[in-house]
Length: 183
Image (cartoon, rainbow, N blue to C red):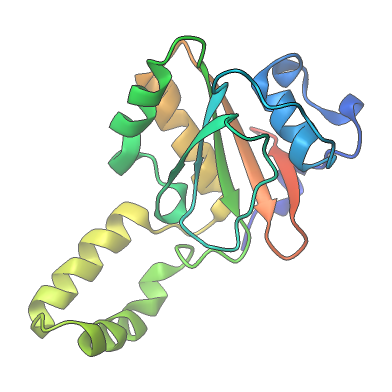
């Protein structure tokens, strides 16, 4: 169950949180949440870390962001990729975008489903499959998508402390993009 009480909708520019105003995060929110056309920039402005889920379809100007996809928008396995993209001059902003109905939320409850599916596509023996699940579930799994986005944002801040990090949340059912209040 997501902590939806911490989601802040963006219905107008006035709803954009102060730290994000006049930054690439504002551009992202104006483009996606407000569905306003934004001119493509001359170069990438930010890094977006989001989930591999194919339902995530962000409305971004062409060439606006480096997009890094990883299960559950989990940063650990892709921190090098994020840091590498941030070495491009002028890129100093990261958005971590989690989403509703993420299969990484409660992934531990899907162990048997995963192992049965894996048996159909792999010749791994049962014990290797179990090790694969346990390692992946430990790295990518979460109990709450909003808390997970906040934790991943904190991971980036600890390692890349001079970068603006915006935790955001996409409701895949509606396409609405929210800011997350860090309570």
